[in-house]
Amino acid sequence: MRPFNDGNPRQSWHICHNRACPTIHLGRLWKCPPIAFLGLVAGKFGLAEVEEWKPYLAYEGIAPEATDEELGLFLRREEEDICRMCPSALEFFETLPEQSPVVRSYEENHCLDSVG
Image (cartoon, rainbow, N blue to C red; front, side, top):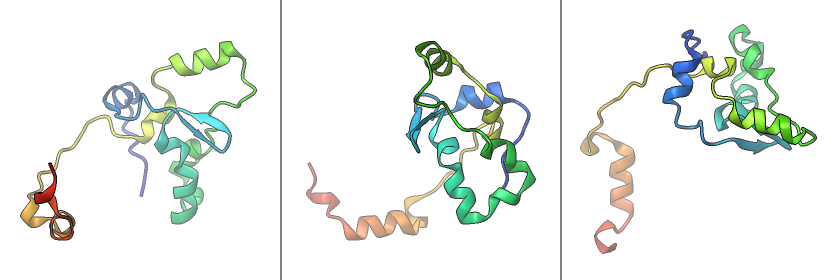
């Protein structure tokens, strides 16, 4: 697993579905859930030793002691270098319910017909 690092953090931020989701984790405010929980993922998959992840793992969000001005700047900031971690273009994959074991399993185990 590697970060995208495709060199366009502005475009990555522009298409990001998490850009309106600052996240509180470990007592700090983080730009988005992926960067907030990257440390947990890194621990599980041994990413801390992978050079490409080090700049992202160094990100710490903003501390509770931040001034109102610092918090305002943090919340108004759009793209940052950490946005390089994510793709700058979306990829869409077509899946058909009859081909998806997850959907099939859900449909088999839930009474969808009785809803509504």
